[in-house]
Length: 425
Image (cartoon, rainbow, N blue to C red; front, side):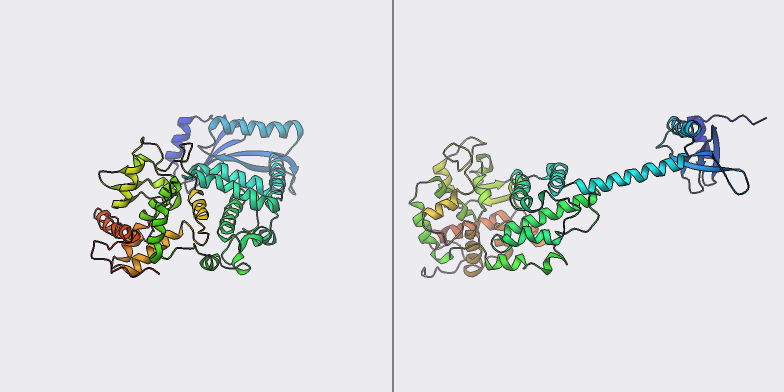
């Protein structure tokens, strides 16, 4: 008479794990189901069955099939898996192990077919959906898909992401690599992360065709060298006073924004996005929040006397009102100041170039530390820069920015850190 099997319970499972830790054992639950402990402490479920095929010795072939680890597969789940496998064996003579292998092979084929079906556009949209919430800058988030729509999709958007090769990358990048270097470099970087997403989600098994290091760098000119050759055109700082004088004669809001940008050595987006709650007229400082800064860190700008006078003419306004509004009272367009330069017949310079003018002036005409000038530009310089961002850095930069404002006005700076202004060229 067969020995009656004592059915397992949750308490019994825990006791087995406790009492047999490091020993290894198998305990039956009935109907071929076993709870197994290995010497290294792993616990899992096994199904013992006979498939009916005869071995050389004439005995039915005994097999063991894993049903998953415990406790991830609970006791009721293990019993259901065992019952389902044995039902197929008894009713249809299907070997559960062979059936599982067949199902896994079919799943692998489906995955391979999915790899062939997912297009680059679908991969880009999948990556965007998964990661866009991490991006703080709404403008950059929107630009991710729009640049791919403009430059990549016409060439590779419809192609299976698994089949795209380096030649396809060159088809996207070569037409704009030397004429729109900054944009082309961003498109390449965005394609690279899309292919990385496709590889991670197993929709691509080959390498990343948009990778720069050791790959595209072999066939495309260095973007750093191209950018250097086409850097932002800057107005020489020695003729800046005459430019400021002309600028102050213009009544357009863009003229006030550009003057403020020059006095603060700021970026376009920092000025166009400025709101009155960022301005502290008492402390004479403008605090730009981290989510509007390129480096993602809050930046304080000491306001010189001309900058304060300019703000006094404009406001103050309500806390969330833009400091430099467009006609419809919304924030000014990022292109407004560039358009103003065109109206002034100054197509030879760029808005961003005024930051270069400030940096050249600080290096050539003053004895202020280099790190202080870099801090004024909100450039990231690691530990040295952090030292100049301590509590006294604002006042040290205040003297720098006042001397810069005096230079822009064509006046002799009051501080001792500036050499006499030479005659403007």
